[in-house]
Structure formats: C-alpha cells, structure tokens
Image (cartoon, rainbow, N blue to C red; front, side, top):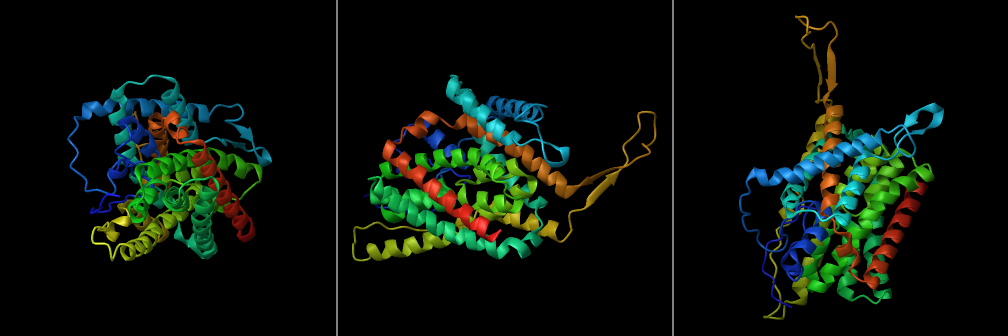
Length: 416
C-alpha cells in the first residue's frame, strides 16, 4: 500500500468520489459515482486549483436542469393520481414531490439518451453550488424548539443506527464474501454520510482502489433506492411527520437523498430529517479520530508505514454551521415578516399589502434549489456504472440498507 501524506478535506454528503484512491476509474465513472454526494472535489489529497471555466460552458447543464425541474413541478400538480390524491377530510394532496420526480426524469434522460459532454460542467456546477445553499436555507424553516420533544430520542436513534450500520455492514459484507476492507467501507458509508465517510475511512484502513470503487458504487445505488422507496413506505404505514423525519435522517445515506425524501413527505419531515442527518454528518469527526488513532498505533513501529495528516477542523463543512445559525435565528424569531404595498397599474399603491414570511421563503427557495439539484444529479448518475460493482457487493449493500432501514424504523415506532 502506498504511503499517504495528505490533508483530509471533507464536505460531507455533498462531496465527490474523485480521489487519489480511484485513479483507476474513468472520468465518466468518477462523475457517476460521486454525483450523489454533490461537491465533486478531492478528499484525500491536496486540492489543486481548478481551471477557470467561462460561464457560457455552464449554460447547457443549468438550462436542462431547470427545464427538468419545471417539468417536474408541472407533473407534481397534475390533477390525477398518483400526483394528486384525496386525503383525509377530502383535502387534496400531492404525495410525489417535485424533487423526486426531477431526479427520476434526470435518471431516465441520462440513462436512455446519448447526452453531449457540454451538459456536464453545468450539472456539476449546479450540484456543487446550490446543494449547500439549499441546506443552509432549510435551516430557516426549522424551529429548534422541536428538540425539546424529539431531541434526546432522535439522538438515541442516530447513535444506535450508526452502530447497527457499522457492525451490520461489516459482518454482512463478510457473509457475502467481500474483503474486510470493503466490508468496513460499506459499513462506514451506510452509517454516516456515503462517499465522504468511505473516502475518509479508506486511508485509515489501508484500503485499495477496488475496495473504494465497490463500496462507493454500492452505497450510492442503495441510498438512491432508499430515497425513492422510503416516502411511499412511510405513507403506507401512516408514519407521522416527526417519525418519518427521524427515520429518513437516520437511515438514508447521502445528504441530498435525505433532503429529497424528507421534503417528499412533508415540509416538517424535511427540516427534521435535515437536522438529524447533519447530526450523523458530525459523527464523522469522532469516527475518523478513532480510526486515525488505530492507524497510527498500527504503523508506529513501521518506519516505512503509512502516515496521515488529518485536519479535523475540516470534517464539519461550512453549510452545517450555516444551517445551525439560520435555525437559531428562526428559533428566536429574528426572521421578520415583510409587508409592502405593490404599486397599482392605475397609479399609487394597491389597497392591500402583501406579506412574506422569511422563514417560509427560505423553505420555498430551498425546495426550488433542491428540485433543480435533483434534476442535475439524475443527469449525472450512470446506473450502468453503479450496478457494475458486482453481485456480492450489491447483495451486501442491499442487506445493509434493509437492516439499517428496518432497525431505524423499529426504533422510531417504539420511541415516537
């Protein structure tokens, strides 16, 4: 195994799989495997400055993502099932969110048509730029007073589910005849935050390229399937908004997937799922710390052994802080309600004023950005690459996702 001497620069679930460990992959494979994490940056080796791109190159990808998002919103509002159904009391509901529709359309377009390479820069830029902004804005719709009723219980579910995923992922991987290292990586990616956890853990267990490729493909694929399946399952068993938010936040793999599934259920579920998921993200730091200690002890007596420089301050990405700050601002009632009178076409001001709650506006803008980002992610994901990781890894990933989802759901049903 080569010596590692590199700074660890993680940005959670929205981050990329293009690292020193995956140099054997093609550029297209890297693009596909990293897309569900959002920010396509190097994680284990120092990041070289990216060459400047003229904004014109971003236009095709942005335009197609926005167009797909627009189609998704139109389908979302169709007055026919399954897009519109009659709920309790005769109230019309839209159970299939625009974000879910957008990623499905993006996946269909990406995997059935030969798309030009000109779309790639814009799709990558949309994901890298707007997923963190959507995460921060989601905090504007969250009142942290909810922690007084669900905080301790949700934290307990998070901790237990991380343990279930780590232990279960490892032993299920071994049961499926995977290597010890691949099994550990699948467990880490399932437990905490997808690609980021995998790429952070890889050098600490001296993982090889094949281990990383197998685990990244597996975790991305089944995180995507969980994102699509969980909202329907939650509706089928009549989970409450709080229960579903905790379930999604503790059992779906990547941040964008959690946001899409949570908001597909309801706005309250989405904000709570986001908070719970970011708590899981924060658990990456202690996990890396423990693995780094084990790694240093393992190589302490080996002068030719591997060495690592881990920057723990970078393990918590900036958008987590932004999310928490905006949540605090909203909790203390510091996001005002704007009121203004529009100018009348006949001159002067209209008799009735328009009011806009900034907290509601933050949530609405976050949903718009998320829908566009889901379209861009769908346009990036090459399903052929994801399913090519091998039957044993797919079986281990499927079983790990089922065990984590079932364990989390059981805890939620007991505690909520």
